[in-house]
Length: 367
Image (cartoon, rainbow, N blue to C red; front, top):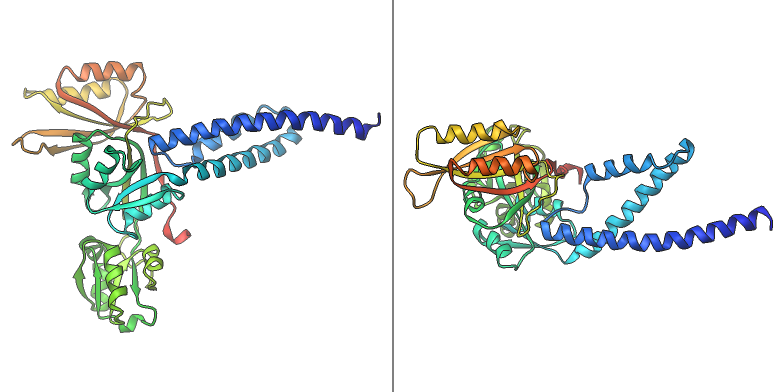
């Protein structure tokens, strides 16, 4: 037997084994997809991919072959992601607002293959997941300008869903007009009050009058329906595409640091040790020093608090619940001890969710 024939026999044998292992790997990818659907997690996890590539590259001793193996692993992971995307095409994701609103944009970035479903309010979108009508819901929890979204915070405290991911969406406002309009034609702008406020300098400089709308997407829809060259909307580029509008001017908001944080809620709680951030809510006993004691307990066990806020409890005058975001594995033994001790000075303690840091969603201008 010559070298070529010998090599081909080895390749055929290895290929047969690899085909079997490939099927096993895809079965595991299917389980991953099911888990991500259940917990409201996106397919792509850059941090996890980097860890796998770094770890697996060390399995190849030959330095020359190692680079080729890394490329092989990357290709295999791309195939796995494509398979998972196909499996998740039926996922149903709720959001509040109309198509083109920033909540829609965030949901589309996080779940590009899912079916997105619009609801009129935060409460209705949240309830759709509780009832099983949708698999997950994407809701805003905080804006760098306007602060926390109180209604969503109340849903966290009172509801049964868990937060399994936090995502930052940079908000960029643009001037949108009908297709035959120019900036010189514009006399009036329509948008959400916050967008109008964030673009106040631009509006004043251009001497536009302004009209408020319930959200930026509805403003764009109204401009499209009116088909008036003198009226423009302040909204996103994504919205322009949806309503066949023309982007007349870019980045008209005064500050470039406008960010909205969105949370993904689902029925299943994520308790993986890899989820190293958590949201905790609690009410304290009505006694001196109770809040200070609760804060000290969290810090005593090494959990780094990144946020602490209070909110009044509905229908209970002068009573408050507290919202904490912190770093650390609360699912481990130390977390159990901390929660047990915390319950001694608190009326109610609730772990709302665990997630693996914040993910920055791609900016619309990159699309």
